[in-house]
Image (tube, rainbow, N blue to C red; front, side):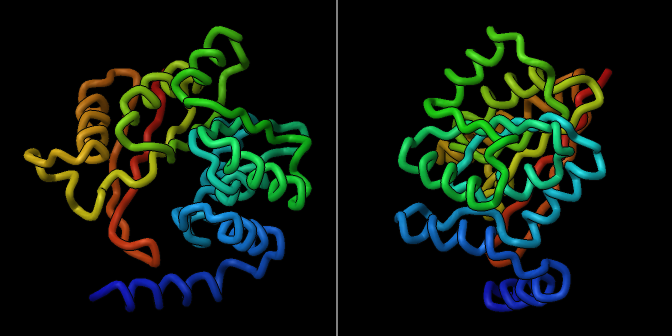
Length: 222
């Protein structure tokens, strides 16, 4: 098994199960044209996020890490008409691309993009005493994963779901000697989950067009 085969399988899955979508295709093309890094979720992963939000019946979603809005569009489409999604992005340039992509997808009425360091924005959300979220998707800078988890556990309702992307790090998450800040942040997140009484969690390894990685799936307990 190698990257070429993983990518071919992802393309096979997407061709069969992810319908052509001009808004999503445009979001990827616009992000590439603006020079954003090619780190958005794959199409089949985006549809998985959509399905998880839909199955959960999410009405309020929190996303940490917007980039060009590709995953944002998938998640927002799972919302009911009166649903809301708040997405947090560090870079103003990325946020502007995302806003344009979200508008093109016809979702501006239910998506709010907030710009700034996510830990600061999360603190503002906490002080504003916003209504609890049903689902959170964490896909931002990995060294800050422990802080993002701490806030997600405060902002997501009991019975809600938290998904954390990129937690396997090409297998490096198992290396206790790694000095990579992204690996260290992810290992700390895993340690926190192992001790957190407010959460039940697992991590799943994945391979695909984005390489060898995985995600954490967390239920906030009652």
